[in-house]
Amino acid sequence: MNYFVRKLGFYAVALWAALTLNFLIPRFMPGNPVDTLLAKLQQRGGSVTPEVRRSYELLLGTDSEEPIWNQYFSYLANMLKGDMGISVSSFPASVSDVIGQSLPWTIMLVGLATLISFVVGVGMGIFAGWKPGTWVDALVPATTLLAAVPYFWLALILVFLIASTLQWLPLQGGYDVILTPGWDPAFIFSAIEYGILPALTIVISSIGGWLLGMRNMMVSTLSEDYVLTAEAKGLKSSRVIMRYAARNAVLPSVAGFAISLGFVVSGSILTELVFSYPGIGTSLLKAVQNNDFALMQGIFLVITLTVLGANLLIDLLYGVIDPRTRVRS
Image (cartoon, rainbow, N blue to C red; front, top):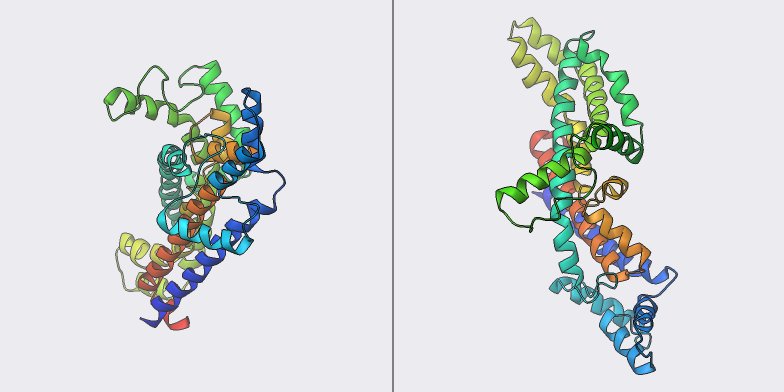
């Protein structure tokens, strides 16, 4: 029980530190969201007066006359209420609405692609480590090379070959624009069709890391005494592989998967940019370009909560999977 309490306490402090940095960093960046909105207002023929500027400052929570500590505590109180402010880049939409529209796209695309690459890569790594010299083992150099290729470069190659030359899949976007977003079969099929190519980019780029890591761990684990003892007892090969070798060899991969799963929410910004995919990465890029501090804070907060939550979950599961970690902690 003490192990779990210590873990919860550690992540609570980490969350507070992340919230504090999330508050401070945008305020030290050059530019001002109020100036951005006032510039847009002037372009539309509106008049900029001190009263208008003051109203925008109060609206965006960047009151220059309010002490920084008061802004900080107001920020924490708003976070607890789920009020992330107003987005400048999508004014007058709230940050929660912008994130709510883009987050499901990223979770479905990057989440499923990460899960597929993990399952396939680890499965192939188990087989390659157990049976060295097979065709799966021969794939390790090629997949490792692909893992070193930047996402955007591989994405551009796939766009040229599959979307532009062969025209097997759509080129850009998240769905057919003539359709209305909803849960009808036509829209779901369109979203799947448009998501195949960017998902394939992520899977191809990341599967090599899981394959290589799991293969090396399997080779190392197979030389352990408990595996040799299990084989000497005459146990079935499938039981030795899964119960003794793979169960222990997969622990580092599980930890890596938790970290990857946490960063799913941040999306693959460059991949989403290449495919014009309406995910959280595209929203983050848009927020940076428009000095949209509120949206940046909201996205960073969601990313932070996801990363901390994924790591907390895997820490707690680690204590269940491997009881030795509870003793050492």
